[in-house]
Amino acid sequence: GALKGSIVVPGDKSISQRAAIVGLISIGSTIIENILDSEDVYYTLKAVESLGASVTIKNNKVIIKGVGLGNLMSPKKPINMGNSGTGARLLIGLVAGSNAIVTFFGDQSLSTRPMERIIKPLEKMGAQFISSNGQNLPITVVGARFKGITLPITHKTLVASAQVKSAILLAALTSRGVTTVKEPFKSRNNTESMLLERGVEINSKTIKSGANIVKIKGASYLKSSDISVPGDPSSAVFLVVAALITKNSNIVIKDIMNDNMRLRALKVLIKMGGNINFIKKTKKKLDIRVKYSSLSNISIPSKDSTALIDEFPILSIAAACGNGKMSMKGLGELRYKESNRFLAIELGLKRCGINIKAIKDNLEIIGQKNVIGGCEINSKNDHRIAMAFNILNLVSEKPIKIIGNNSIVTSFPSFFDTFKKLGISIKSYD
Ligand code: S3P
Image 1 (cartoon, rainbow, N blue to C red):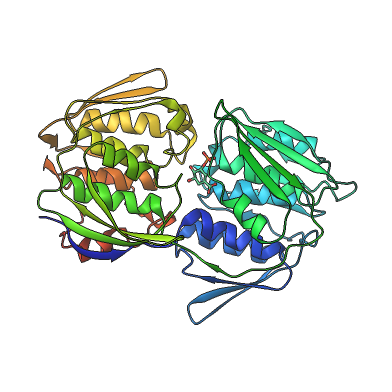
Image 2 (cartoon, helix red, strand yellow):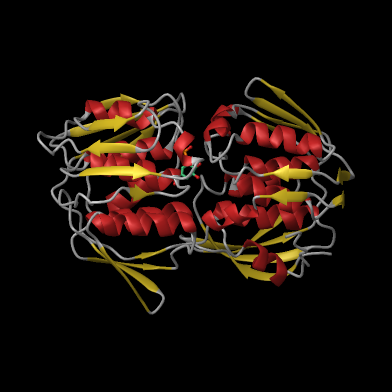
């Protein structure tokens, strides 16, 4: 059937996790409204509590009483970060600039994700790391200020990653000097905005080549500031594509965060011919109407891959249903997400009968009028792979059985309920 009706998208994951983390190091209370109720956020809240913050809930709002900068507690027990790369990397960065000693661990997926990309710069800043192979969780972090000081550094990241950049910026808060991070392309800047709002001297500029340079000065304190979390654009895009590919659909999605970089996937879908109208727009949020559309595939250059990094799984589904060839370039980083998403997209779409080719770090998809389906997709507990293939199910001739739907709780627990609200009937195999 078609998707009909109006829905409010749940809170943004990146902002929710950062709200908890900056709340921990702020002076006074931080009141967080519309925090995302998901597993990744839950693990981050539990972690900030273990590091000394008080976390309470009143009138549906989360209240964090911070410990200030440099007062982190060394918890007696290791901290479990579940599946959350953002939570783990940002908190490892924060602890690296503190005088605490903390052990972090995570689930099977998080335990295989590369950490040397944060360990190397954080070691230069004075932190020490103990792990079995120098690159994976479990990792014990001995903060630079345990016996010494946090050194400001200049660091060039190999990949554009908001998580790596944020880990260094959070560590740099306790240094007495200016730390510079240069990334090959601009990654999402939520950490920078939140620190600036709390009085930190931080600025960034993007140069001609596309590289982004961020400079941060160590601070003596962060003033607290309340946060109302806007809707997650990365979750909204799943609903957008579902409506675009399902005949007769017409839906309204409300309260999506109005952030240029995070809305890049919507721009791609509009360029593909998607009928997406911005019906209300404020500085912070927007409401959109999405109608079923005939999509034409396009070419996405590698310079756009950082801004679209979380959206490639669902953009691939749109491409599978579009006309012509979709070419998506520079997708190497997809191999290091919650699962190897590059392989998951390639093998998954092949299984569903789609013509897809992987050439080095690029994917080429030839869209089809009819998607055959009738196969099994193991999401390897990756929420975005599970959600993407559930959406392909809306248009496939034979049902696609998805293994690992439980992983969706990490970012969008109300995913299936949302589809029910929009009029889609869902049958479970379990
Ligand atoms: C995130 C950054 C991105 C993204 C992730 C959330 C963040 O990772 O994939 O889902 O909140 O900082 P990288 O910037 O490391 O690629």
